[in-house]
Image 1: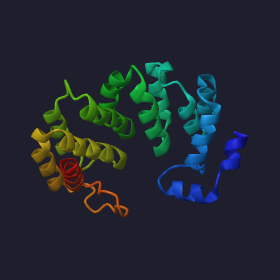
Image 2: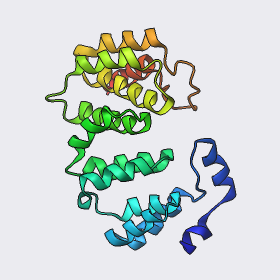
Image 3: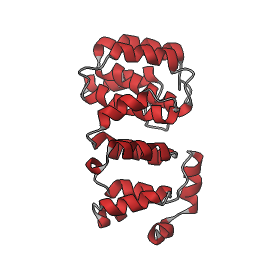
Amino acid sequence: MAELAGLDDPKARSVNEKHGDDHGVNLTALRALAKRLKTQQELAGRLWETGDSAARLLGILICRPKAFGRDELDAMLREARTPKVHDWLVNYVVKKNPHAEELRLAWSADPDPVVASAGWALTTERVAKKPEGLDLAGLLDVIEAEMKDAPDRLQWAMNHCLAVIGIEHAGYRDRALAIGERLEVLKDYPASPGCTSPFAPVWITEMVRRRQGS
């Protein structure tokens, strides 16, 4: 904890706070620290229990993702209220855990939009890598009905799923494009130079173009 405190940078903290995060540790420095510590499941748990965001991020990097139980991950997700901790927990831990599919189903139907956004992130992973058994048309139905008025983080996760359906599944591409055009979610979101817009029709079209051109 003392070493993490020494890595805290007020400028980085100021930037992170604009995105809803509450830590000031440079992530490159954090990853270097994690590399030095290597995998330590017990220490990872103790770091999580501090409630400190930088400590939790470090704990995520040094944990054994498959070592967590279903209820343990559910509780951790509900405690992970800052975007970076939430995202890293889902992407670096839950996706590699044997309970991922069970949690995907439970979280997708959760009334808490932040928890539901984790369910949608897991669904997007399946759409891209293991779509067998998924009802893609049904997912598009839900997105079409609910994305426009969803809270920010849930809306972002649904939009990501919409884009991936359009990119990965040609048979659903026209419908995904049409839903994006009609709902106009993130249409005016400022994209950095060289980055693709998160507006689904632009995102889908650009990614398909790149694949066809390669």
